[in-house]
Length: 238
Image 1 (cartoon, rainbow, N blue to C red):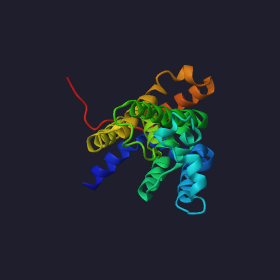
Image 2 (image 1 turned 90 degrees about the vertical axis):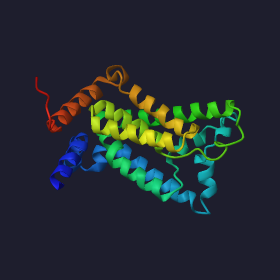
Image 3 (image 1 turned 30 degrees about the vertical axis):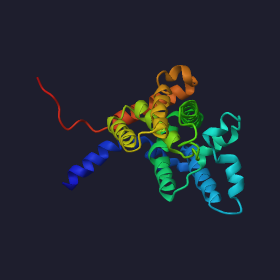
Image 4 (image 1 turned 90 degrees about the horizontal axis):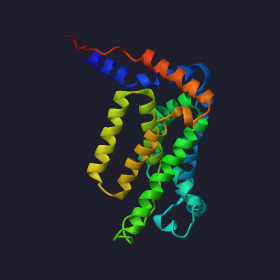
């Protein structure tokens, strides 16, 4: 039983092997500095939000509401990606930094990760907020804070699953989004569906979306992932 569990976990985490090897050789900050900075900023901003003396400053830069959109107050839109309000969200962000953001950055580079994260956060947030503002219930729901790292993480997870061709990662992502929609079927959950679309679009044609050096690096990483992926346990025979 334990051997089967180990084999299943090894299969699930195969996409991460090249990343772990690079971290072992060069260190996390050398391999994934943008991911580490994102997690660090999230923890700092969220900690300052909970302090009375710094709460107002964080509110000014990061407390995004849908009602800010008609007033064109856009600074908090960017800052809202770094603000989480519950300890479990902070822990989830730290885990996502290691499991998803770091491997994606190691594969496609920090600039590419920044682009995926920025679009993965801004596009779903703005589209859902516009839909809410145009709907019949503009005084409810999203009138509160619309903050968190989830859209960034979902977009990055989708891009990583698409780039690495990892079926287990894609299955976990699909199950998570499905549970989210089933338990909280509202516009806020629809942000994650849009983030999935942004993450998938980011890797549709990598040759046209990033410089040739990044493309070559991604090809090398994909070859490493394929070599690291265990052979299937069962094969079909004629």
